[in-house]
Image (tube, rainbow, N blue to C red; front, side):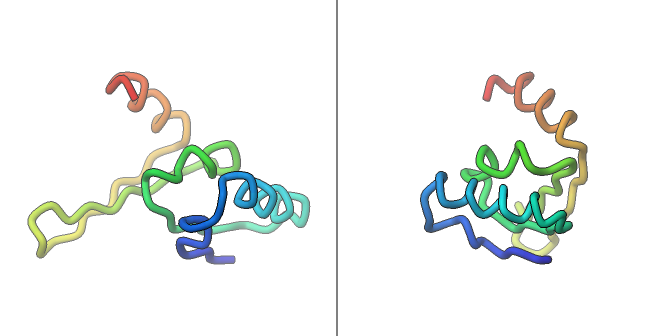
Length: 78
């Protein structure tokens, strides 16, 4: 199942409720969300992919496990 920014406008509580429901249904999800909502989905995912387009003409995708993401976040102080 693909969820594209479905949690961007709702509350964190309603997003967690939906994610818990999908987890109980044993669905595999691809979630597209702004970085400011990653704290909501973090407990429910095993991998993250960051897409960046800093120059405006060349998108780059970086894949990492959730553990690698947490370690990098800790190194950056965030």
